[in-house]
Image 1 (cartoon, helix red, strand yellow):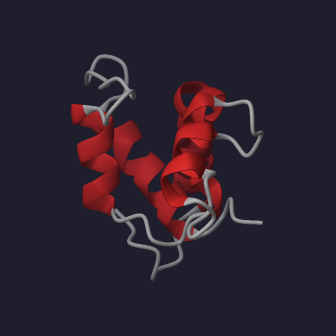
Image 2: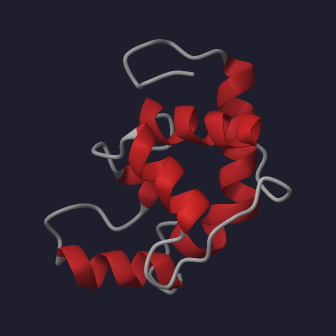
Length: 101
């Protein structure tokens, strides 16, 4: 699994992006009407980007804990929904800077 300091393979990034688009984008994409984006905008008041793909401070541990355990209004996701392999790819995608604008 990557940590943002390596060059992850295009296959891993593509898989991570697909997981993000299927499970995360409806809540966390940059559009302001997405509930996760709205919640993070209210929480950070501009001190951090609200959209996950624009963040540079996400750690693998934070992503894994949020996905598996949920976070405030965010539900948790079971391994039958997001497999460990898909979660690893999502972590690589979100920590690689590939989605940052």
